[in-house]
Length: 617
Image (cartoon, rainbow, N blue to C red; front, top):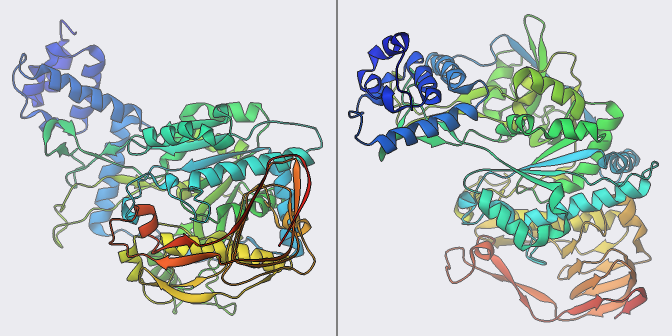
């Protein structure tokens, strides 16, 4: 505890007499924090403080929270308050964040699945994978989905019940193994996997990993980095908001997934990765079940084009509610390639000599590709940039004003930041590009609950658990079609108020087919899968040859078993039964999809011994 208080310190606190009288209970480091607050216009926080000896424990707890808020933000609370004042002032006058910038279409790579270029890029990506680290941004709960667990624990599809986190880990392990196989130097390093969690998800993510033995990944490969929340703001003067239920606590809210950059910077991992020869960092979000279909080819593009930043993208319809990747050039000559939110892109174009705004070009799509928030960064330049910024990302503020005077808020606000805004601070010499993939192959996020999804205007994506699962079956059916299998055409069905295409329920483990050229080697002859069929391939060396499937087929095998699937396999199969999402007798993860499987009959085979086997109906 501080026993004597310097007179200059005491003078500083004269504007906060209640705090001044309590300085004797504070240690020197807490007095330094008090200085920061007073110097940045936060004296009102102490108006209610009683004399020393009353609620001292709560007062010390207040400063412990202030210490956390100060240490977890690049530049500390002083920087947070200063930025907040600037952004709130801009918001009040309605300042255009893109004033002085003119938009144009940036350069990038457009890949068509199955093309020669696509196949080459996939192969190159596999070679590069052993030099990559993967970062999953997983700070959110599934409440918006109507699911009370962490989002990464949600089944990606219900044919096998594989959750998102398991699929991601198995995909990384499959890439790791494939990369080692083609490595010319015989290197056998493990691909690091980082998960950014939050207070809401940290312990549950840890529990899921531990209870599942990390889904086959070495625990040493996995690092959890927990993001802290930031202080809420009460007014345009950036006064910190006290918790309405506790006057000794600052109200806090999430800062956004842009925190991943400062967390990586402060973790020391980047240096470690550079020392072990890594070259790439891949960032992805928690519930896009198709993502790993796109990663090998995108990584190949990054290596071939030597991109410092590569944004994964999909074709985007004009005015669709998805950000567009745009090159912005300022009147003063500086330029950047970044995501511009869809509601800002159209007015920006209209104000810059494009009278029709955001319109489709002759391809039927907007020339500005749709950003899907998956980034590939080259590690060396990334670390250099973070050394300049400390990982701080350009922030924004989105206050909800009580009225048009914009003098007071309906509720407290806070600064936010987005992972994909990283390129905003890059120099013009940075090589920033994008890779566009077929949407059916690469993008089917799960974020809307059934009620919200059912209200989506016709023709727009639902982005629900229903559409996300159906997209996986569609992608797998189309991939097998491209590989030469005759796959039954889909039927339209309404599930949870959403009209979706129901394809055969085809799914496989990542180790069976990570890239298209591998899948083609495992498919031969004249094979067909009927529309009502279900097929799950759980083994690595399973070959489809002259198979005619009309029903359900589940095959699992150890790595040393080679299994050939052929002949006619016909049974009563699995029937999809409608489920009402309001039916609480059904588990959440099922009812948010609007269907469940009645497993009437299937052929299920497990091969647990090494050798060559043939499964014929």
